[in-house]
Length: 147
Image (cartoon, rainbow, N blue to C red; front, side, top):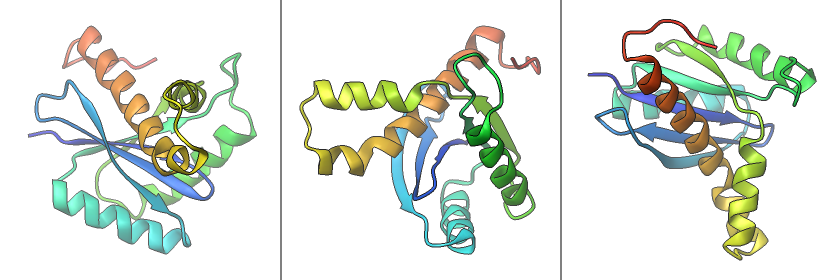
């Protein structure tokens, strides 16, 4: 059985989401406060073991024009570093505007800044993973073609 995890890698926090068993719906799971790279690996390995994760989808913050800018290069470097320390493969997925979409939804919900901070990263990870799942569904489960 496949279990996919979604990550929104930030500089201070990492949002985590997980897909349901049917691989159709992504659900926010948690936010990890980053206290160093090794701490992040420990936290992720705990989640990977608990849920028996088979693939990790990481948001790649491309520019609005689709280019790989400084933020995307930083995420790519982190993913490269993590790949050697985590068992399942990591897949980069274009996450343009996912954090802004989430922030807009949270503002529309009239949540306080403190409450928004607590769930923003999880919801961004959920958005990234949901977009990936939707793409996989529309392309067919066995498609290896990725944009």
